[in-house]
Image (cartoon, rainbow, N blue to C red; front, side, top):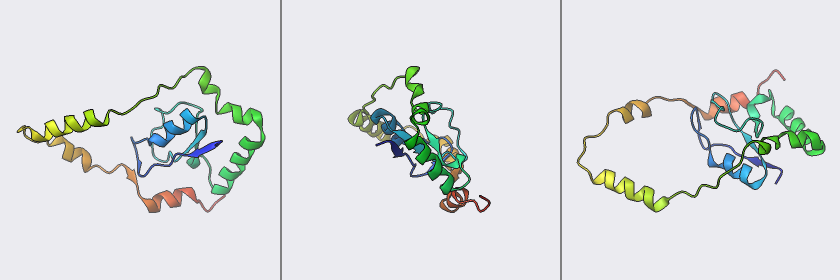
Length: 137
């Protein structure tokens, strides 16, 4: 694939879906939804952010240009000259084992987790749709 929709299940400030990394490892250009997010942890020039366009029609025009113009296409792959990807295989059993041990301890619960989890830094579905389709295009 040339493009890979790397949309998150949730639009939260500090969350990046694994789909972004899957796109890069497969050689595709990830298309991300970066509204209200810090994208500094993504590789610069490696992705297309749908919120960089005021209307889906403009995004479609840009995607068509990337498909038809080799130089435009290659701009999204120049990062490969400076960066390399390391395959990361999650240690599922090790993670579950650690979680089980933590659940079995008699340690008091850390109240910080409730403070953090009560802070909403996520974009609602309605706000997401409104940001994608702006009337003044």
